[in-house]
Image (cartoon, rainbow, N blue to C red; front, side, top):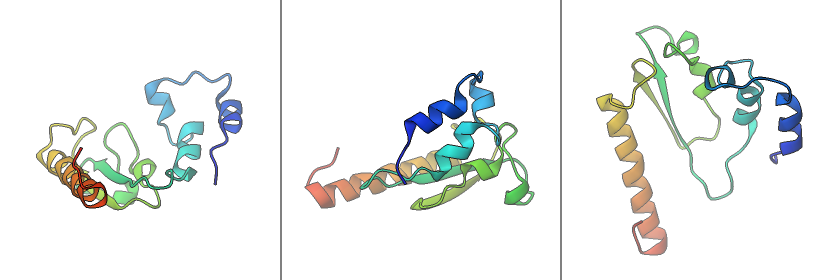
Length: 115
């Protein structure tokens, strides 16, 4: 699949997209972007935030529905049980660190250097 910017423009033209409305499940961005593959050579990881202990398929983080964050083709998917602002959550920090260290090691193995 290729990214068709004209199609995306057409679907969002005339809509008032704010940060919250852009991430609603029926938003054109949220229906189009998960279908858009990553560029060749790019590895993706998902950190999905869900409040409470309920089922993931019905969960949300208080703002975003869990299903929006679930994207095919990711190298890893990590679930954090937290509210929407999870950046200070210990589990989130550890997962971001793991991804960055993995990327550094892959870069070193591939190019002989670490960025």
